[in-house]
Image 1 (cartoon, rainbow, N blue to C red):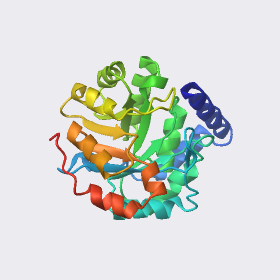
Image 2 (cartoon, rainbow, N blue to C red):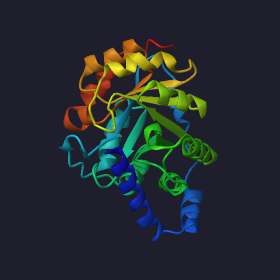
Image 3 (cartoon, rainbow, N blue to C red):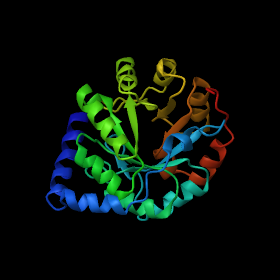
Length: 261
């Protein structure tokens, strides 16, 4: 599954590259405001922070929500305490797009994450050209040399790399490239099965100066409380927000203290 997602995302990126030259991307980047400081936004409180996701579908659940106006949803997120917005731009299985990211960028002033299966510098340039402040790098899909190269390239454009892991080896690989924003995903991207206890078993491997993000298997306030008790600084939530009451959920999360100070 993960290989297919990376291959499809790369194929779509190559198709876009035939329509938009590097010089055009550079011109678009020059018109963007400097990337926002995502690490400060996600760590500057003693409460759990939320990366709220624009998510229409997933390979495991199929269609979740139509989301005809991603900008309006992003504004609801930001107005109710989301510290950052994640925009899924993968087209085939998640039904997202870079147009969604551009619309969200125009609507909110919080950091925006481009969540996709990034494997090339061209995809990173697309992210910055569309207004992203954070770019996802999935350790499981990249050789260490590729991870290091893309990590540095993201930083060179003023953005923050968000490095996603799923086991101890991947956490150590994230640390080795200098990651400070590190996700521990309860979902195995090879099988799409989830294990929420995974976060508690790995979080102590993270450096104290890092930002620990719990990803996946967040369905309710008790789930967020469990992650907070285990040491999460931040949670990334998609499905529960797009299928439920985002205002209530986000406001309730703001009451949950952060343990890992």
